[in-house]
Length: 360
Image (cartoon, rainbow, N blue to C red):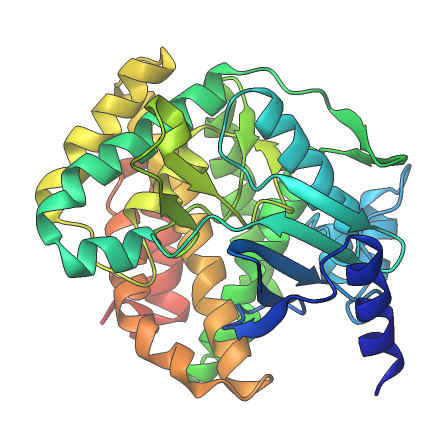
């Protein structure tokens, strides 16, 4: 028995779940591992988030230069090896009536949490079984996003004696993510990006990020899509939407999670839903649906999809997960559509000149 497994058993014993049967849950692209536990008809999920297996996250008081020196997690403001990020955000969401998993037990020093099991109703699976539910489920998700945006969240909070600060999705984080397009996707397409071209890329994005100031930021869960949202029809209102994978949440433009939901990398959302869902979000969130919001949506979409294109190539090549290449055509199509906004003309021209294959 490994030391880690012994620690897990001790943790479960202290929580009075050591007699539970355990089964692995398929993992995501992170270093976290999950197991489903069953005990006397009750269910729970074990999160195993070992420390020290990722680059460090941003320490308090770090400058942008410091963050860059520490690596990607710090500059992009990824929580990494800090399970308190999940615990704090989950607790704050739950306090406001949202269906984040209830925390049954936690040992944040070792990276263990025992969580409420939200069931098997992942949006992607539910809609695959009954496509007629797509509109109802997506409208419920939109209403939940709008309610989260309307809610106020403290920048600093505690859970179990551990503190976590929700940071801003600043230009350094946004640009670091967009740069994954250059470092992985463009390179995979055969592009050789010169230092001058990279400087131009940075300048274009910096100007685009200024368009995001048109709307007040709100809490972005940062990975809100059909594989991370659960349908809980027995609950009421926004509680019908179960939330996970929000540990990297930041204060960001309200279009970010909206883009994540509608421009899903893993499934095609019905084209006739995209426009109405965006308008519904603005109405519920108290925002004007006009050119400024449409532009911000396009900028957030271009940034997110550029990032995902880079991440999927990185997962395929560095992490030996070639299945992610199958998702690239859908993400590339989203990216190309984002570039059609007039404010993205310079970015589109840059891509056409330096990575023309990305527009084919």
